[in-house]
Image (cartoon, rainbow, N blue to C red; front, top):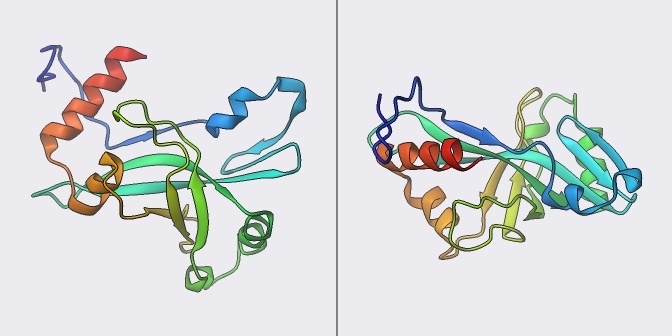
Length: 162
């Protein structure tokens, strides 16, 4: 498949992109970072983050496009999500309020601090992140879906600007 923008050959189009740590993790001197373990991060014992997925439907497809992102939670909700890590039925937990803590630079407006709801999933699955229904382009895409051309455009941007 060829990239529609630069016409370079793409072996496959990824449907998921992720960030290793919350945006703010990189803003703190390394010696002050406290903990980053897989899907959880704590900075200075007062900032709490969890990793989850923003799922975006792909129009005319059964596939979903996924942004693997970080969301800040209150200490109480962070500790609760950790308590439920291996508890069957945890998907029945009420969603947690959080702030998006990943900068997705392909959007014309910052994605940092967008309001979210974190929906706990079954054991073994990362939470689903629901954005507040605003006019932010990412929220619109989550609500309305994207075309396969948009998926290719994202692949082009990520593969050619890193």
